[in-house]
Image 1: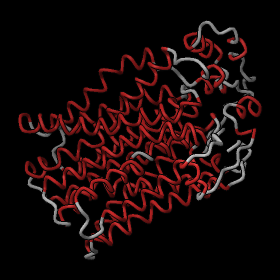
Image 2 (image 1 turned 90 degrees about the vertical axis):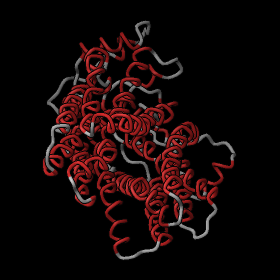
Image 3 (image 1 turned 90 degrees about the horizontal axis):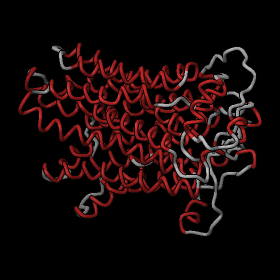
Image 4 (image 1 turned 135 degrees about the vertical axis):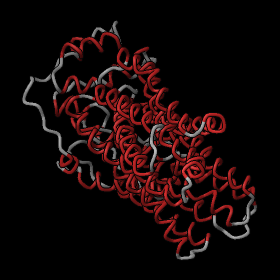
Length: 477
């Protein structure tokens, strides 16, 4: 499947990207050709190209965007209630460290295990089941009375959210036209940041009036609103239905997607039904995919390490640099704002110039700006600019990594590929804040911390460059 379609136009961006290498563009890497020729699965991308988004596509993307928004709310909820919990339970702040890690660990498990399930039974049932599961877990968190109970519930919540995120990216990618896939997926990803910001607003209103538990009650009730719509309107992946030879549902969703297409009989044709394929993570390393998978995992691990290091520690480190509390908070907000702007900007650039030519320079620029954040005596306006750019490259670049994962793997184990990319990245999200805490405990200076934090971003850029130089695998990547 194609992961890089170069425009071939002379521009400042392409000149900058040439320093990171040019990926080969084999004919066999064009979108959809692999599925059509190698597996017998029709090329559904032909139905989606060169036509406006249908109502089914719009509803699907909106529903997935709502799920991502609610995931963002619930992931950040424990951070918003942490100060109130410390006061109510008379805890030391350090006692909440395992609570934060438990949610991330649960997301790691959910991404890696439920993605395998989705490649066997379908994206739709796993998405709906994961949503119901984390809804129950979030609501139950309001009744927690001890730290161990909170740790267990946050781990279970993370497990459900991990299943939602991996399969949301996969399903959305399969209903996006290839020419606009990156733009649409990165736009959907903005819902996660928007959900986190919404959680902050709701927490600020509820906690002083009704206590910390009300935040989790609201977080559990919000997904219930769209669950009936999920059952009614959320479609199954067309390539998955073709792969498992489910002709009835395939014809149904094809008719809803484009009822006036004269080619529906052709697309409704399925390969002969054979034994159910047993999906394994080992598929990510077969047929020349191993190096691509390892490099993709390196990028995801390093970038999420950076992302959570900056999200967790930037306001505190800004305070150590001499800025006021209000300025430190605004610096943290600026990082998330940069992430939103980056996601909206990088998507169209990826659609035009390809993943490698955009993500490589973005991570390299992110490394430079992260190192500059800790520069002594930096003017406040310059610091805000550096944080904004770092947020655009690191926070805004993460959805691009997820989209790249969705384009790398064939339909039979696409959810597994995306899920393991996110799961390995979650290991980085756990390691980032812990590494920063250890360095601070050893009296590392702020400028040294940010210089060290620039290393993972540099690793991401180098890994993108290495991927661009790999020869295409048998799957066209």
